[in-house]
Length: 459
Image (cartoon, rainbow, N blue to C red):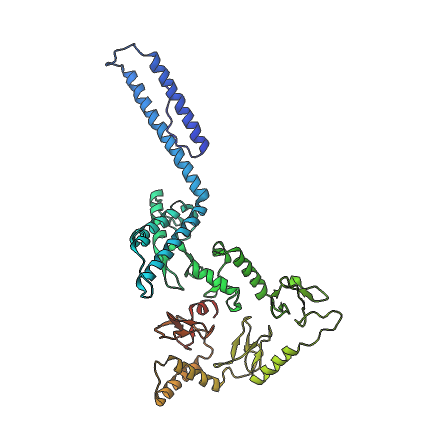
């Protein structure tokens, strides 16, 4: 009698070999059964025939088991190979349903919108949310391998092993929970957020928005959170080809010290250094084909010496009259409204506003008393909920002035306090001048008001 080996195969070829072996054994038993027919009474078979029948039933069960294993293995391979594509499609579907829910809720609670008829609402909101939860779980249920290198995962530390089902259940629980975006403070499924090295989590829209804004705002470049750079790879798959190209171009522009822009005022496109000819310093704009001089930054002057830029000289004369200063590194002109003399340019250079030299390389006072007083008055008037009596206002100004004199070089240590209820005008970020209505962050020492973006990505 052939011996049955219950070895579970792990590869496609092993499945085929096992199935072929089982088929041969079933064929042998079938031949034996045909030879032995009629040699005994039907109701009284010998023990050997009973054993053969039992062995045949066992082989058939095992044959069915192998067929099921082969199908399961095929499905698992497909999930592993196509999991990323399926996950992206499912995530997009989830976002569409979330947008639809938001639109329904807005129209139902806003008096200016007419409530949509029941036929247009489709499924109840609870059913849609149940579908979204199930879709989120199924999106990641076949992608456990992607998280096997997670340094927080239980299998990476010494301890008793757990079954595959337990690992699967633990990962599904981890992925299905909701986490809060550090910027917009909304809750999302963990799979729809992106963890950063500073331990913050951003939703996809907030992180993508930060990268898009950084292509137009040098103070946000390079993109960072809590002074730690954020790799482009974390959000690249959610950005379009145009957005990625704009970010790459901005990275070249913002890392160039002596920049050249198209002299055509209707264009003004940045010209990368590779497009400036050596020796002649001539550069040609790829958008409007205007030739620009890389030295004086004006329209290129063939066979002529580079003239002085009269408009730049007028600007510098005005800066001198107004007391504005020029950054020693990039030549950018800056003005100080109030506060101490410590200036930080958009190119990250730090210098003294009194003399223009690198910070702490001069003998100037670190703070001007008049500007400190102006800043104290500005803070008191900004935070007052109503018109203050002159005596009360003076008392508060003295308190704030004393605090500012002590903290005029504040580096904003510790946690900012979150201020709510900004009224109809909301809050104004004192670094980017943008207005915000939900809340503003305020340093506990120097009382500067900052938005989330500036607090995380500029200071």
